[in-house]
Structures are given as C-alpha cells and as structure tokens.
Image (cartoon, rainbow, N blue to C red; front, side, top):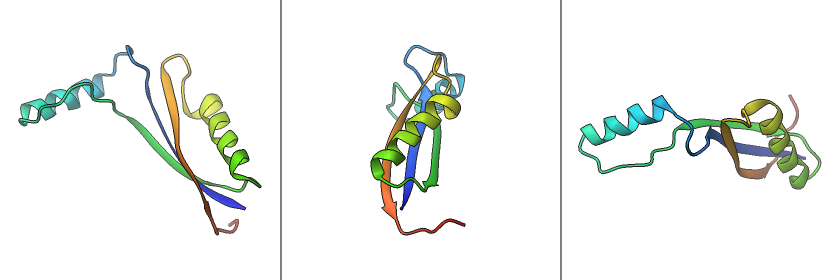
Length: 88
C-alpha cells in the first residue's frame, strides 16, 4: 500500500521566531490586520507502510527523530491519504 503523508513543523508557542515576526510586521505594514502569525515548514512524502495507521505512526516517528527539534518545535500530521503509487 502507499500513502501520501503531509505534515508541518513549526516553533512552539513562546519560542522566538524572527522570520515569523518579520513576516507578521510586513503584513501589517501592507495594511493587513494580522497577529499571532505562525511560520514553519511543510513536508510531504510517499510512505509504503502496509496500513494507514502504520503510515501515521511512521510520520510521527520521523518528526520526533528527524524533522522536528522537540525542545523548540512542534509538528502536526496534516493528512495521510491512500494513493496507488508503486515503489520507484
């Protein structure tokens, strides 16, 4: 089976994120009424786990071991969708 996994990683609340702060200030300078902007990283990949539950666990494991710094960042698995893609 194959699954398209989509996730995002961003700083935890209270962690200084200068990029998000600069973007938020830019939106306000352009006249948009914004606050509490969260800026992070988006990732998608194809998983070849046998079940959706296994693909979700794989995504969480990858985030905890590689994609996110657990001290400063949090992650969210946005979706795990079954697709018909074959390996290779």
